[in-house]
Amino acid sequence: MAGGWGQEHNGELTVGRRERTWGRTMCCSNTSRPSVVISKVAIPTPDDATCALNISGEKSLRGAEPFCRSSLFLPGTTWSLPVSVAMALAPLGAPLGSLLAVLLALLWLGSRWLRRRGAGWGHRTLCAAGPARADDVRALVVTAHPDDEAMFFAPTILSLGRFRAQLCLLCCSSGNYYNQGEIRKKELVESCAVLGIPPSNVTVIDHRDLPDDPAAEWDTHLLSTFVLKHIETNNINLLITFDAGGVSGHANHIALYTALRYLHSEGKLPEGCRVLTLKSVNLLRKYISILDVPISCLQSQDVLFILTKEESEQAKRAMRCHHSQLLWFRHTYILFSRFMVINSLCLL
Image (cartoon, rainbow, N blue to C red; front, top):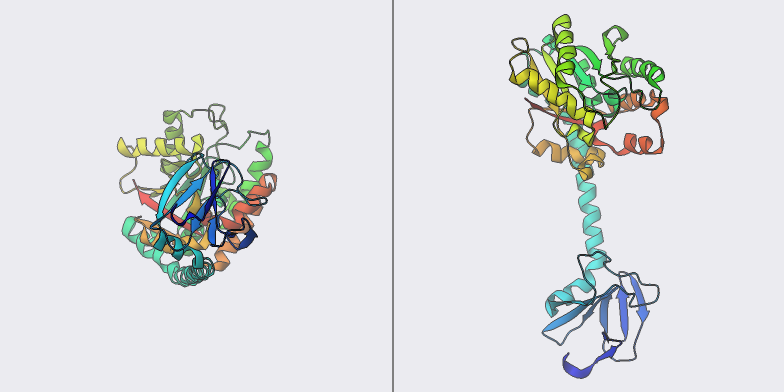
């Protein structure tokens, strides 16, 4: 380093009289020049053409955590950073935080505005993707377990109810993984009643070859036989289920998509019967609630359902009917999941 103001201790270069770790200032050596340090990243000011950034796995300051413990940065890695960048980093803390706060506030306000306007979008996109009139829709929601209807499909079910569509639900297992099958059947009926599906339109398949088990491989032909029979009995013209990702990646969810894709590709569905699949999203989008509304509006989908605030509360009441499933992380899901507010669906 030029200027002779760096001191080497145990193979590491310490510079400056003070070091700063994102808002905390700590005294270091007795040399006269200041340096800005983000934990292990030492950024001297102003003279040199470049600054050496030394990142190691040890603490450089007592009480200061390393900037990065990831294996992406190996101990002893040296980076070169232009002084102009180093000088610009120092004062950015407060302004950058303020900018992020403003951006989040604008995103939240925009989400609320789009949410109020989005209630009618589902009607238009549904008519474009399905029957010409929304009240001609006879929809069958095909789920894998009791609580799927509230956890994942509440925006679709409540929006279709708002459009006066006829709704049926086919649940392909009793959710008996923890021997709670009978309890969960009753909870399902209660939840569907909150969502506007009468008990007479709720069917649960309790078959030994279709167990609630992520390790079990459901038979596509058996599953498609049950679904096709239900379609023909109820004169269904719109099917709704999971996509290839299963939203949560559960094997039973994905098996439903495989079965309906088989019926669709083989031409076994009645004429005019459409299939909509619930679009999976990444983990970040899954848990930002209404902040995902602007992102969803910009994404490609065939049908987009967005719940009003009142309908979202109704969806939460439906989810709370599943008392046996309300562990702590379910409460977190109810609060933050975008699937309690938004459903993006694509046609097969």
